Image (cartoon, rainbow, N blue to C red; front, side, top):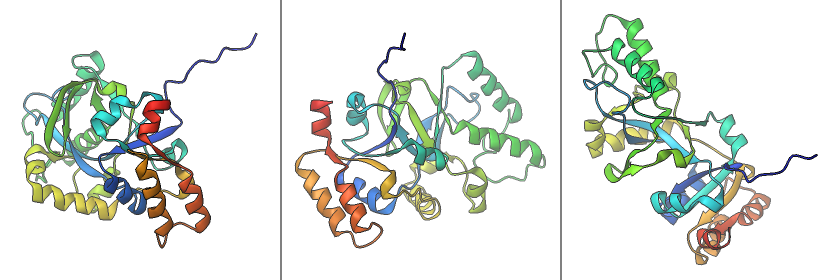
Length: 270
C-alpha cells in the first residue's frame, strides 16, 4: 500500500520580501547586504540587561506561495526567491522560536544572567573586563541568541514599532548573520544597542560597513522567482534585466525573464 501524499507546509524556496520595485532591483543587481534590525529580547535576557538589541541580518521565509498573504501585508509585495541549496551553502539557517517562561528559554536566560549579572554593557561595548574567557563565552552565547526569536511579539521596521502581538512562528524564518569572528575582524559587534540603533547616522554608517564587507551573492541559477507587485511591472523588470550590462550572460538574462511573476497573479491563482 503506497504512502498517501500530503500538502507541504514548507517551500523548496527561500523568499526575501521587500517594499518597493527599487529595493528589489537593487538586490537583484547588487546582491543581498545585511542590516542591523531591532528586535525585542525581553523574553530572553534578565531585567538588568538591555531589553532590545539590533542584529545584523538578512531574513528569508520558508512558506509556500499559496500562503504568502500575511507576508505581503507585513513585509511588502516584492520578492526574490532562491533555492534552499543556495541558502544552505551560504550559512543561512532556520531560526529557533522561544516561548517566554518555557523551560528551555529560562535555561538560556539563566546562563546569560549568570555570566554577567551586574554589567549590562559588556556585550555592547569594548571593556577592560579582566575575565576575557567569560566575556568570550558571553559574546559567543549572544551570537547564538541572534538565531532566536520570540514565538510572538513586537514587529519593528526601520526603527519604528509597526505592530504588537505578531506571531513570528508563522513566518518560518531563515536568517543569515555574519560570523562572529569576521564581525570582530572589522570591529563590529554582533549586536547594536537600541540607543545606537536610533542614532540614524550611527546606524547608517555601520550598515554601510556591513554592506561593503558581507555581500550575500547569488547566480542566475540560484534564482527561482522574481516577484513584482503588479502585472505591468513584469515587462518593466524584464527590460531592466535585458539592459543590464554585466553580471549575467545573454542566456542567463533569457532564463531570468522566465522567472518573473506578479504578486497579483500569485494571490489570485495560487
